[in-house]
Image: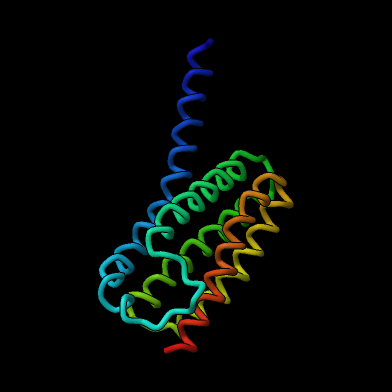
Length: 163
């Protein structure tokens, strides 16, 4: 293997690692607002009967963020004129995702968070379709995320109504 090919493989691996780290960092930023409020404010919020146990959220979000990172890497590697626009949409939905935690947990505002999660859901669906146009598998990797945020939207609304 030539030196050029070795450097290219290292470069590809580095880009892949960065693509995985970026959404994990978004999750970490959101957790700075979520974690301190789980045992305080959130513990006393009225929740619907279908509210999952708190321990489930961390593993689910970690997996979803990994899937998002893989999808973004796939899109980044594609030589498609839509690639840059798709990655801008991806970045926008990551920002909204982080903002949801800030509004729901940090500001303790279920109504504001519900309004934001509607916008987030729309942006995720748009992102998924954009990725799908470029590389089908990248779009498919967003399906679990869209489903989870759909559930989170219902949960968020129920919490708003109950409180």
